[in-house]
Image (cartoon, rainbow, N blue to C red; front, side, top):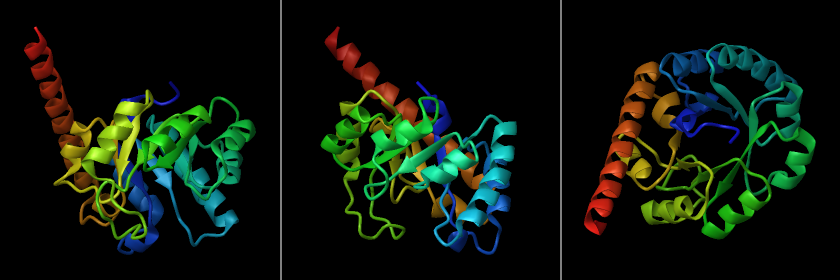
Length: 226
């Protein structure tokens, strides 16, 4: 497995528009201080040069702390900066082609919203999945919510880590983890927070609570079968 599920617990996606005047580097530094271990660089308005330069600076920060830098959409940028991985959506390069370009060691994530999509992504070489939108979200208004049941269906159908994405907040993160997700992917819940470092730590607590809930359900089932 190219990425340990525990690293995916708090997966933060950058967005300058939601950062309340803070630079992406400032945001990333605060995320890392709060023990966020995966940064997905997603900055739609940047030129390729700007994106490469920013990615190189972030990579130096993540590498020093054992965190992972994932580039959103841009296989070329991921290749140029030796990023840890790339995350692909429905309109991006197919996983199989990205794998041929990036090689076997680079992490590839894929956005899915159905079991069929999840299985196809795994067959094409995805190392982890971003499932959602789990809840309605203003970040991607066009994406219908799959709900907790949809997330549970995806998680139970594959043998790679699944990250819950879409409308994830402090109040519902534990439910997503309880449904089988390895972690939660957030944008505004962290990037737009007053205290980014504290928001990461609070989110991590909810992830751990969700894992405890999931173990409790599993233990109950095991007990009932004895």
